Image (cartoon, rainbow, N blue to C red; front, side, top):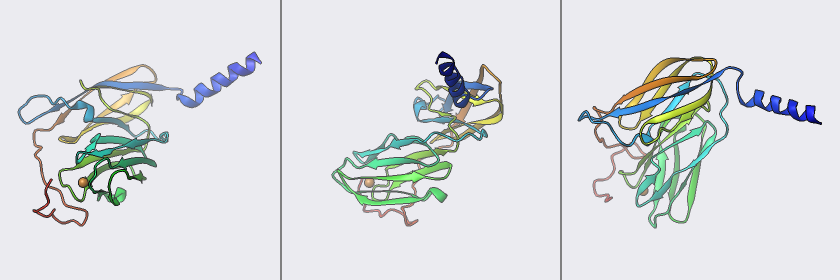
Length: 219
Ligand SMILES: [Cu+2]
């Protein structure tokens, strides 16, 4: 009985954690045009590209309220879904034209909700076809090694298989920064990533038909 229990524990440890794995941790910073450091670092995402480890199923919710998406940034695994409840008494039309992850949930208003399953890794830009000021992002990852930084930019990604990989960070005003790393067999690796938001400026996007939003549309 006792021996059986012990071997079960050993077996489950072997399944959940690779024999050799390290922690990738560190700091993200975003530099604005003025040279000052951005404060919305919790809207960044950090991940490790390369390890072929299937992610656990995941899902997220992005609520439409007051004609904004909240949160603005969500991360799901490939095959994960994002729910888009509409809490406004007006119609919204959530859509994306981001490559293979393109989708269109059509019109609905409170109390209805819609959802989409994301099947391809990558960054998905999400908009509303009625209100051009509404935007959000879904980052779809093909392994479980991602983290959302704290407000001060600190992050930690545990149990990353040992090996040579690329750590990437993304922020909506800065795009991506990346760094080649070698994750050790055990212990932690420190990584500092600086994202450049100095070239960012607000630019209009097209509606779901690839056309400009009508000028008369009021926010
Ligand atoms: Cu809308």
